[in-house]
Length: 437
Length: 167
Image (cartoon, each protein chain N blue to C red):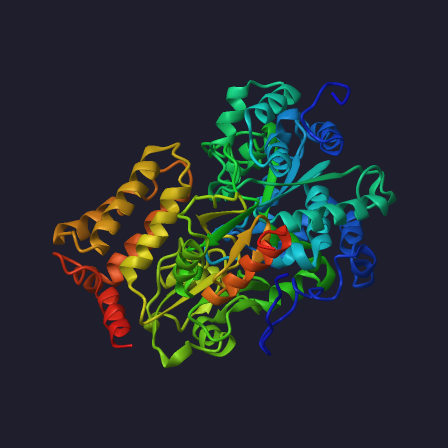
């Protein structure tokens, strides 16, 4: 079991039913469940999309694309069937929020898929969870069965004359499948290799049909927008950044946890008040604000609102909502290396700049951390990363390059401290400390 | 298909019969089928691959091609309890490397090793989505969070007791 953590500043919208037994459909209905789908049925496709646009909801997967806009790109007429896809392949390091949604409020995901289906006139939806979340698949499968039994899924849903089916499944361990086109390949029973775009999924997606694919948090938010009203939902956040976000606080904090806070909540406050600050009287060294792929922020850069635009302006990204906090004892080179080890492991190998780039970056960072590098290597690391940017099939290449560039740019001195046989100063310090004990 | 000879239990065979009908194309059932077969058999053996290829109507090579992509799918057996320790950033910051090293020592095996009695296997894994409760590990599909070298020993001991070993 994983639980939400609360703080007086939290605003429960997506987490409104968490911890209230809403995995059972009767409890979900008692807590205003499946009312939003009924409202959506009355509104019809154009009305639903208008509400979604008015809510200012932006994709919670990382890119922050306006959801209503995304849905409006799906052509009204299509020779091929249309699909709604939920990306629950949560695997960006630092991110553990979708897990709570599936665990505590599975019906909100189902209801969100139904509304998405009504918006684009699809007849089928898929909920794809990461393979490690097997216990959540059981919860989702049970919830789907319950929804069928109540007539909310299957033939003639809610007595509307419309048919809609949902299939749930898991992946089998692959970060890359969190990329939208790779996820579609995986759902088609293939290796999760990304597709070239255009065409975008809204036009040619799953099985070649028009598809909307949204992050699980995005989809789970949809019924809440219809529950409280798009205008009221938009008001919770900041300009062009409607609503709340499940922020996953991790790393060196007194109170790590997943908290639901308004979009635009101050990052400094999030770390020092919500997260309780840095333990053991240590100083803050750096913050990775939105999952491992987002460029690092320095302590003097964190007095910003956590929405897509403000974090973007600060030179990073809001990303997946995973706020990773590093205290002064962390070796940035070691941290950069561990991050790159991940991307090298997860690169699907399909395109060369990513496959070779991540591997060389891992090798270079390994050598640097061990003390075997020369001055030129630092520039080479940055040069290599910069040349991966925008040159890969899918965003995984950028995801690996962006944080690396940030680490070199902001912690150059620390990289230099490792050079010419010196190795890791933090390791030496830890060894000395251990020897004294 | 259910009337055909199968290497799977009747329940799993029935589940597979249904699974291939859920999707617009049969092949979409491939990844879930491999996972469920692996849960029952222990790994994606040659016979598992052959039967799944036949059920879906693709070649064994196509099945192997998919298996090699996904980190949870394996073609060799692991221990009854497969201990997967996350050492990614959030876990690393909270002592995952010490937890992983401790597991190696306690179990007497290296990364991707299996204990001689076949009870445990160990693997260093990437982020498992437990960042706010780090460091974390999964034993088979069960999560264990906020681990320390001491608490991980208790986790391992509980599984050992559950298996009836060491009595």
